[in-house]
Image (cartoon, rainbow, N blue to C red; front, side, top):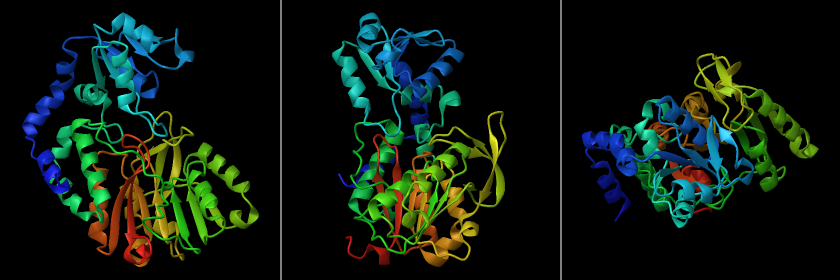
Length: 395
């Protein structure tokens, strides 16, 4: 089946029927059984908190980390998978709540482990999250399947923006994942370094890089490892104070010939100059919002156009926890004038998968667009927009 035919079939689903299915999917799977959560990390705790608020807390957590066995989380015991299966394998639904970036884990690993231990009913976490959507969704790219169908026109149009078959196939599998929680249908990560796809564009020795969401300097480290001092300039922008301190420390430790080409700026990037409020976690998931909270700090937001005034950026990377569209709008002048290579994450929200490439195509028709996964199960999914002139020697 072609990508177009498969996508058309996916989008032909009835909207009303899908809304009913997403409400009922978990109950059909569970068939009245109580819940055991496989995975006592952040996602499992998020699920347990919602279940407790609904008056149906999990019976137990199952977890492979021996250090957690014999402990409890909010009164719920943490057991080894064999012990959880011995106690509850025939009577509970085991919901796999392991899904995170920078991990080789896939749902199939836990499903197969639990089935081998004798667990009768094993589910991925999305059906549970659909049931309690008002408390648990949206969560990164996870959202209700019906919301894909509500935008089916844009979803269909976006298939035609991609410049190669690999991107079209990846796009369809990602749409299917959002519609049907089909973990098995997702491809494994590509092998090249994230943001620096040697098969998609040529690197320039005078590359002028904007690193939006510089975190602790991980992208700067990659540039130095791949290209040494073969670049013109890097502007590393990071709002989180703890991350920014790590970034500066990392840059200060680089050889002088590399360090002198890197500028660090503590700021967020957005659609306009503003004061935003940051949940400063000191992790890769630090995120900003327009409203203050008890655990937020005020940060300055600047546009990329303002941050790069007087320069001609050739490469812009954006990994900013769901604010990518705002940042692109604040970089519109750079994009119009200089046509930089763009490497933009599209996994922080369900609809970024189609909204971001459609936005870029509406601005310029001389970019080639590619979609590449850099982690398992939807994480670190990047849209690359490459000016045709930068494709020379790569296709």
